[in-house]
Structure formats: structure tokens, C-alpha cells
Length: 119
Image (cartoon, rainbow, N blue to C red; front, top):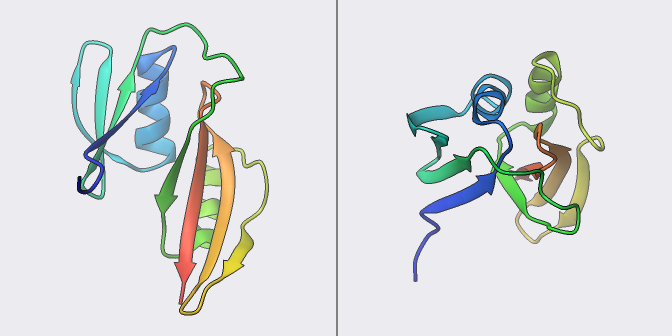
């Protein structure tokens, strides 16, 4: 096995999810086929699979987006309408970097996170 090629998330409304991931998160849309919307996340495809019923809260998944300056990215995303569950905070001190994270949800309640490996 090698790197992850694609991650899929079920969403209720493909149009709403497409706008959030494109406009709020700033991801590059690759293409769309019906209710399937594909984005590029640094070489990993993110598939938003639209038209599903709301996902039960017992289902858990989290997509972590790597960023270089977590505080600046949070500020930009808040202007675009994103709402965060917490503020960027230190998760762990590693031998060669600090791991910082903050968590938020998309319009369907999918758990998302920003992560910065600060050196």
C-alpha cells in the first residue's frame, strides 16, 4: 500500500457542500459528475457524494487538512462563514515540531480539522 488516493464523504446536498469546500475551505474543484463532486487536496482526491440522508451522529470520520499557519487560516475561514468547535491549540510536542489543531464541521456535520506541524 502507498498514499491515500481518495477520501469520500456522504453529503445531503452536493451544491451546498461544493460551495463550502470550494469557497470556505478554498479547495480546488477537479470536476463534477451529477451528485459527485471531486476536489484536490494536495494530490489526494476528496469525493463529496451528494444526495444522501443525514449521517447518524454515531458515524465518525475526520478529515485533517494540513496548513502552514493555522491561526491565519482560521481567521480567513471565519470571514468565509466557517464556525469552529475550538481555537487552534497545541496537541503534542514532538522531537522536531509541535502539532497544532482545531476542529470544525461542514454543513452536513462531517468532522473536519486543520493541522499545523510547526517547526
